[in-house]
Image 1: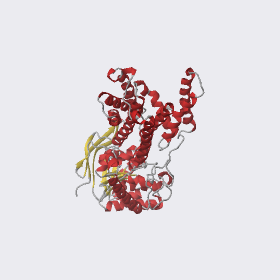
Image 2 (image 1 turned 30 degrees about the vertical axis):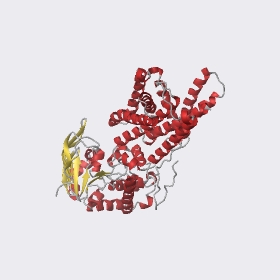
Image 3 (image 1 turned 90 degrees about the horizontal axis):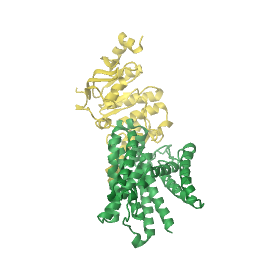
Image 4 (image 1 turned 60 degrees about the horizontal axis):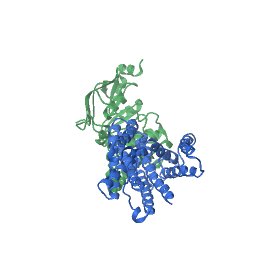
Length: 303
Length: 252
């Protein structure tokens, strides 16, 4: 049963990661693939706070989220002041640099990883309770991002993606919106990191590298960018698919490369055949409250 | 009468190409000034300098007496500067209504903190902006297509949406970049009427336009630009009649 719980936890965590990453790269159009480093920051901050200072786990997870949120500004503020394009380079540098740094910091476990992270809920209420917590928070994340992107803030992000210059000329501050959305997305990833750390109770720097980045990116691309359910479906499909392969009883030497091939093949397939993903986004932004009165041609529903 | 927009000694060159050569210009409240000149005279560049899209090499720009120096575009807009674009620059992923909804100087969701923690205030601001947008759409005859995507409406209507979106700013100074290019018939009359109404409400307007009839009908005064310089200022009739300027314009 533990195996099923682990899969469910992973699905929940990756729903949170993929949805928050879609907020950054899809809705806001910020090109960055360093999302997992904020997942890592959340995991490490929460693990260290609860382990070293005995902080209650829910509070430490929250602090992990805030830590990731603040850390995101270190990357986004300098990069976005110059141009959106620099964010990609700056964020990858930040991700790889921080991973290397963590490997050499023995206080946080170094390359060997951080062990004996305090658990939460499991001792008192069993593993099921943690599964419920993670899946519930995944649901809350999806609903929150839908609420944000279908409200006036979503209208702003859409316009900014369309034409940043015209957007600024209307009096809107594009840099601030980018920094804010990047921070929200990163903060949510940080909370997912904390949730990971206190369930598996072991984290190591190499978990949060480019492989993780490509996994989250694949989920968003395959599921469908700028949709509520796209990243959810992407996360579920890409978490389950490797599990299905394991049932074929293949030797490990084949299994590993096969999974890699599958992911890469999937991305290539979608790029050529269905670049909009499984769930295509509507090409007209429609806010959550349809305008009363004149309902002429804007009836395209938002997926 | 004090100027709404005051430009003094404005200079800008890109490498060897001079787009603004010590330009002095004043826009007065309620008056429409036409910028006339051949392609490459620096008309649109002047708009870009005023809006902060391009940084000047020298000179000053004041809006209602306040210096715009060093301010980013969005802050200039919040001070009451609005413009339309030669190539429209509408938001294709938004409906006509939502294009307008982004236009007010203070937007409902400018502050993320308000979005997260003051939903009531956001709702009130949205409702206010929506009423204002409805009113402007009504006045510009765009109400029937309020929910349409901007790429589904005619080019003339798109131009009109550009003007309507700029109107949401409740601007002190409005810059119109070729509002009539490619526009005919009923829409022509609608844009003309819209510009007249805005001027009547005390807004200072500057229009770049190649349509001489439009300039003559609408502008209180004209300025002739050539190679980044203001060569002449006077009534539009006067400028059109000047053989020297006509020669520069047509390059004969």
